[in-house]
Length: 344
Image (cartoon, rainbow, N blue to C red; front, side):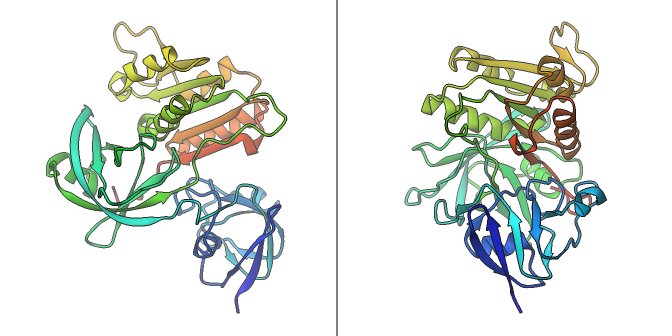
């Protein structure tokens, strides 16, 4: 028997059976709730169960520790209903706003930005209009039924192209193909847009909230899309971008990020290198989220958008909240994950 799930404060409802995750049941009901990786690693779909019982399923303790479970928190991508539910979920949209679609695309161009980062430009069919929010991602649909997820790195535009930043994963099936065998004019299939990582407005009757973007490696891609959209729409908010990498080559569009300071009022760019300091490097070193804490000991009035490895996301969320006073509902994240048994 399906259970009734009510999302508050929007009061939207959907049905969920015991075999379907709450996230999938919401998506099946054409409701878009916050989510990212869909496998319990990123924590983007974490929500509070106000009433009712859930089975936490495969939710990892690293993302949903026991203390949070006892406090009523659940990962919607892993949790299954065991009764009627009321769930606190403040950012709910209709899937009719921006539909998820499956489309063919052609590789328009390939450019190696670093030894292990490839820029792919994909051309969509001219007869199709592909809508997306800057910050969302697409899945490549592979011939064997597997999927590979990559963030869109450009803002929506009239040319019907998508830009992706693909990092080579040692032993990776798909990324190995991108670097060794893929060529221009190849035909691929994608599904999207997916995910809920996107810029949020400042609450009504508030001054524009300062924004901190935190990127690790190719986590720069969705943040680049958001910043390009801010430029196009002339959104005036104080913005600081922190981009962390192990070495200088990891800051693969460093000059582009520098150029934004001349085009976006109130914009600052802080590159951070965590590995061995390159000769002549005068920038910041260490963990990228530590640089944020050093510069912003009080984050209580900010919004933070973080994208990168799950360990970086988890550490940043914890430290920003505990040390900087950042409200948890002002931290938005997209964690890049892959399974060792299903490498990208």
